[in-house]
Image (cartoon, rainbow, N blue to C red; front, side):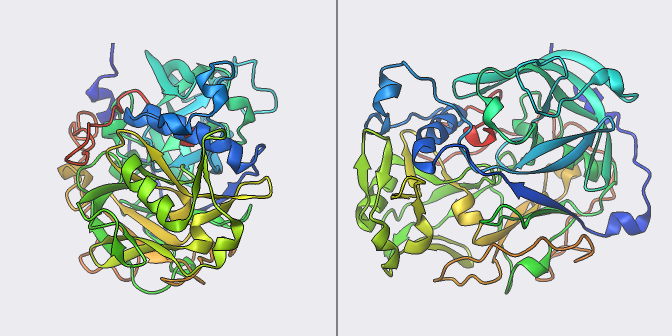
Length: 460
């Protein structure tokens, strides 16, 4: 049995002051140190993304231990930017992920996660069991449990009757992660139960005035920030460039081209997704192969990665993704990454059959990203995503992304360069738009992603 749409509509309005609603809310995020070098984590990253989008890891990039089937792939591979939340009065560390839409946490009954924070429904006065199956696939494992509803608070913003997964089985992978659960910030239409996300409910319950949130991702352990209710101009410079979301689901938008040093590599129209939970820049195999050839990266089929001499960071080459009004660019110093083993790898990784480009943290550390859901009561009319260079970055230079998180009073509204104003947020609660919303769009020459019950390796 599926969770019914009416449950998601029976939402009590949170009682908060008007001043608190109109002021933005910042939550510092921690970047966890990884327990394995990046060079060894790439196969797991690609495997998780392939699961999500119905794509395939190219045969040439499957390391020997994968083809032999003797060693499972862990999805504890991507960079992890996480922060605190309270669920039923209990504090847990959640990964805030623009590439997924489900909220789930480990139940106190899970015995295989020593040292982790867990959620105990018996310690909550606001827990309500729904009891439907909750099952999300990730790589070689899955998160299994039952659905329930709870009071969930993030950065002082409280949502009541939030549907979430109370997970009793996390498989064999999550022990290596530094966070406890996941809070998806994509659109509810791609959630496994099709229920509104925590942020969507925060808007419809009028706990927050503007349907906008933003991310600043630092390259250091501290300093990253998620900002709710607008943006924090202290983290970026210049104007914000907005492009429309093609269809609510993922934060998906159009690319006009892909270029190397200004010359087109793939002039046809493409689609891209901004994913705070993915470390790399992942795209269709043919395009990625062409890019890696141009930048001088070489396929290492034994490790399943593209290696590149670290000395090439001094090259003046640039790979760019033009959108309307802005060219998202990465210099050699930005797209060449330390592999954690004394060498370097390319951030560009391929998947066969992938219908979109996935712009992960390599891009989002250089560009401050602003996510505007538009009018949630009208099928997300006006939904858009904005980008601006972070402080210390230039369109042809290395990104900054290492400053401290700003205080929560840094700004009380959206980015000042917004010209058409935020979407209205004081209308009635939505009907069923977040529950039975449209499926994510895809590129015209690729298959539709399989998303209804699968989230990506960005979780772990």
